[in-house]
Length: 449
Image (tube, rainbow, N blue to C red):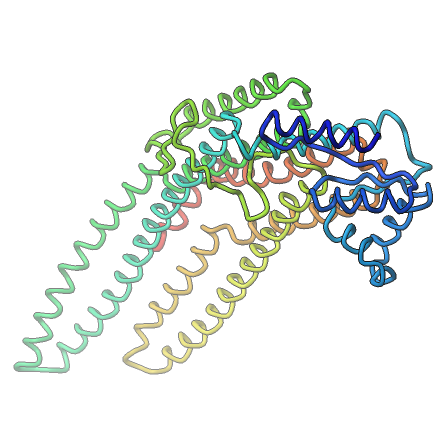
């Protein structure tokens, strides 16, 4: 019977010129089953092992939990190391859920094989939109930060020039002759600069208020994250994409893209245009065939729960951990800088002539605090820490489930729904909060001038 099935598979492969998705079910078994399991591992076929049925099935299940005990068994060791294995307790076997798990494994394998030859146009276009939004958001964010930096530098320069001008005026009183003439020329130049700087600062502020680059960046980041979330729901066949008909799933993804695009078009983000270097047309032409989300993820194929956790949840958890640490370091640097500047200002206050420059240290300290508040570092630290804890809790919940509970599609859908909700809420929070506080934050930043 095995030989007949193998012949049918090989014949079908020859006819279709592409491998068919296969899955092997290991129940008990002896030497022949061990050899077949090894072949499946080498072919890259998933193995479903029913633990508790004895024989090879129990040996493989035991080797997964205690690989050191099976070092002397090279065949079992190779199977455990090379194969994609799902272990199910015999007591937990339920026909409906187990059948769904087998369908999911076969569908995932079929999706990977299909992705190797053709990519779904809707998924391709969805990724292209994500890239477009993110590229434009990065450009707008760089513009907004540049405008903010220029405004703060102009404010600091004005403060420095005022102090220098006062120092020169006091020098005019103490000096005569050529020195006094030189000081008068310098004072005249400084007076002109002090007249020009407020005008330049007003022009930059006006441009920044009109451009609203940071606000556009936040809206585009929120749109990109929402669309990315839709892609992962599509790839895990959860939520509105829990459909057996591929055409219906593609239609649902197209509706999601239409909704996100409409939201961007009706927001401030559409005012500068959205461009991308990908340049894909409506049929998906122009897509980079070598594109991958990461080394381990092609961005298109269907994902199992384990793959989703590794490629999506764990990756995002690590990102939040790094960003939370970065926020803490910056806040610490700002605090130390303020203490140092306070000490320098106190020292300058005792130095007679240069005590005028105490206001410079005060201005620099105020600029640092303003930058921290404009970046909303405390809010970001809170958001990243909260998301990190939520991801840890979600992963712990999933690990606490039994194999049969993990195979339950409802639990998988709940996992995806909660994980994607965490990611979308974080970015949307920044966008909404910026809309509510935009004027207050800008005015606070511009008080320096």
